[in-house]
Length: 338
Image (cartoon, rainbow, N blue to C red; front, side):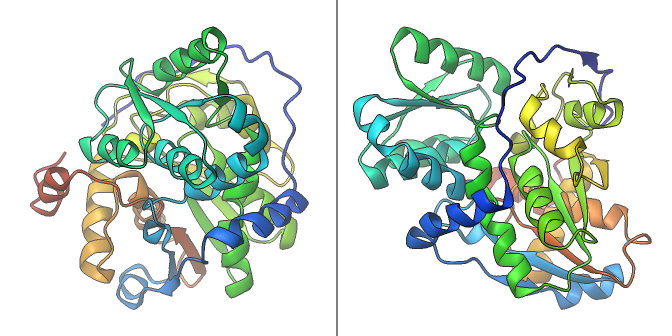
C-alpha cells in the first residue's frame, strides 16, 4: 500500500513544554500507585527467526490493553482538581480514549471522547463500558480532534490533546523506565508512531539514560505524515490510507516533531505496510501467544524489515495494544486481510 504525496502545513505554537527525564521519574511516582510494571519477555522463537535477541514489552497486558493508560492516569491525577469542575473532552481512535475513560472513572471525573467513523466496535464499547460518553465525528482522527476542540470551547470542557499534551508523554515514558531498569544492556528500541508520544518518550528516556541506545520509529505507509516531517524538518500532513487505527493520523504536531528531530531524538524511521503489520500480528500470536492490533504489531513488522541491520543486537519492541476487532483478527490469522 503506497501513501499519497504529503503536503506541508503550518504549526504556529512555539511554546510547548518538552517533557524531561525528571518529568518521567515524577510521573512514575503516580503511575506506580495504580499500575504494576508490565512484563518484558524474551522471545526465543522470534529471536531465532530474526537473528537478534528480541524482547517484547507487553503493554497489551494493561487493564485497557494499551500503553496509553499510563498517560491518562498521570494527566487526570495531575489535573484532578480542574477535572472535578469541568467535564473532560478528548479525541481518539481508541486506545487514548480508553485511557482517559479509565482514568476519569478512577478519579471520579466525567469524560466525553470524540471518535472518528470506522473505529472498531470493540474500542467504542470499551470506552462506553468505562463510563465515558462517545461522540462519533469525522472520517479520521484529525477531524475528530477539531470537533473536540470546538466542544471544549463551546461547552467549557477541559481539553486533553492526545498528541500535544506534555503530561501524557511523562506518563507514557514510565514504560521505557521499566524496560531500561530490567534490561540496561539493550541496544535498540523500535517504536510505532501515530501521534508520537510513545516514540518521543522513548527518546527522552533512553537517550537520557544511555545515549548509545538506538531509537527507531515506525509509521504506516498509509499514514506517513510524521515520517515525511521527520525527513524534511517541516510539519507535514498526508492522507490516511491504513487500517491501523492507532497509526491513522494525517497531521504532524509540533511537540513530538521537536522531540523526534531534536538532539537526542530518533536515529531512524521506517515505513511498514498494512500487509507487513498483519504478518507481524500473526507472528506474535504464533510465536508467543500475544494478541496485537495492527499498530501494536508495527514494531515487529519493522524488525522483520530491518533484520539484517539488527542482527546480533538486543532489541526491544513494545506490543503497544491488543484492541482488535475479533473479526479482523480472524481475517488476519486466515491470511485474508490486505
